[in-house]
Image 1: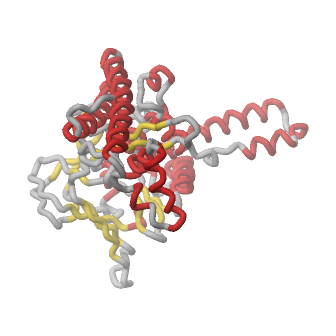
Image 2: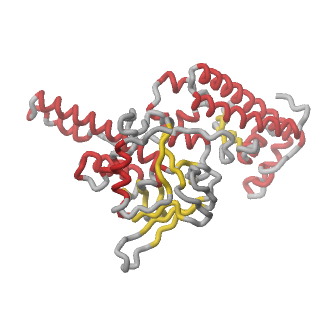
Image 3: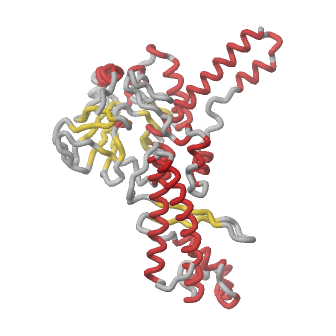
Length: 389
């Protein structure tokens, strides 16, 4: 363990007048912060109770990121300054004990991204999660529409400020994506101090509820985070962020859990004159029904295709969802095994390259991907011992 830094005492002093209550205390190790139980905790106990007035809230993640950036720019004038100054920075700050956000894939450089041989899954996820509306320089465009009214020096200063704003927006968006929690329908999202410092365990039952202010206590609405697990004094506490795959945790939080029971891995299939579709494998090695149904149709022979002629009458969907012939099912299994074997080999080669590059995170991510595909192949081989692929 390492010291959590000077920002910690300021933050912890701030939590008390904010009404934040928890039986946990903060600690830190080289890979990041974590929480330790100050006493024994039983199922049904609160790990945290916090007034919603002590949370940064907004109706969307994008608006929450803009609000966080705004509060950061207010500096010490912000009510949330002690919390914001305790959040990670882009590059980290060892002196104050603030971890770095650079471990998130969105900040990785080309060479590291090249190690991620996952069939483009991480790249597609990062492109999907891009927020082009954050940090737009529309003001900058307006400036250049009226450039004749500004000196070169003022334009230079403005561009520097725009760069700083965009830089801050990257930080704010990364913080929100990796730390915000959903409050419920109609309530939006929140950056919740202390909650965002409890680490994830998908198997740790966790329940959140909001007690509405009845107008008597004056404390406002209170968020309670309750555990369904027992912890002993001195144990690290965990909560579940949800049933997250390895791709979810890598992209949003920068970690991967070996043998994650909620993991699934996908590989994109491209066949001539067919629309691309994914084959998805779950943690137990089972293959999603949708891809098998698609392949049954695509690999059916002329006689088998006649069984699909009733689709327009609404009676053929059940045929796709189940085996239509032994021959067809064997072809489907062989195709799936061949596709997964190729993807597993690519992931395994990438894992070995990542190990050589001393990149344990990428190596673990790719090893788990390869293991999941290999598990699916083993299941298929148990069903068809002579399966060729």
